[in-house]
Image (cartoon, rainbow, N blue to C red; front, top):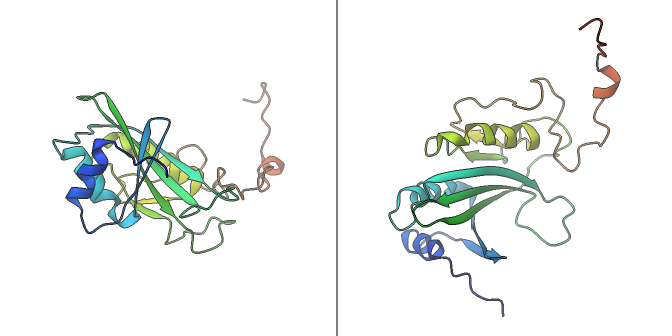
Length: 183
């Protein structure tokens, strides 16, 4: 039987939200709370403002594509929040899984790939959430400036999705070459 995750934040969240379902994992002394996407914002607000949790710094927001992952996952995409409590010198991860409702080969907006933005809690989440949107196509409700950050606005897809073609969708063939003399 695997050991029970013992990070104190797990107990705090479970006591604060007794009717909600959570999953918890620990790997190499790193604790991760898996949250339903609909509950993400309220749990994140609790982790930031609760005196027992006090995760006052959002270090990073990342996206993951689990397409063709060797083991079963809850959803194809995950958004992971890396939280830090300076008072306790403690790190904690929160993960929300999303499953697309339409094929992911195009740039169509998928209503299932939405999460609530945490920029109202941590303003520093603005650019990492934009990067997750740009690279994976996951959109954030109530984001103050959700637009592409690494590719141009009309870019034909989301390049870190695992089903995105390795050579791109014509970008190399239509790319305008500029030499030093004409720049």
